[in-house]
Image (tube, rainbow, N blue to C red; front, side, top):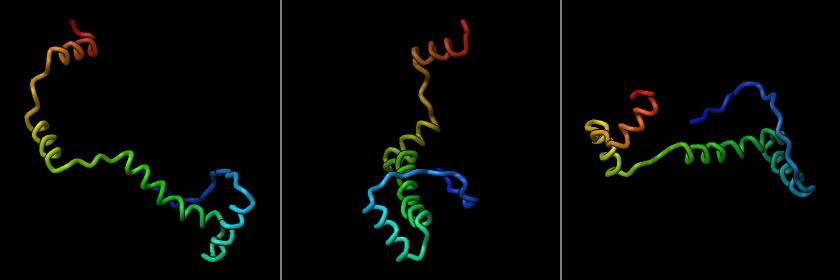
Length: 93
């Protein structure tokens, strides 16, 4: 899971907006007593975290979790195809 640094903001992102969108963002930031960058970052970063978490995290059902743990504890014997792939990968004859 990605973490967000609290260090200095020295990177830039440019956004293209309509005049109306920019005015709306400026008004919202003013109501929240924030500059526009802080308002946008506070609003967007949680959504970005959610997207990354969903993409990087696999949630298994209880049944699937039990199956994975059982396979880790008692792995099946390698198939002939797996043995051949390992032989090719490791360069053995």
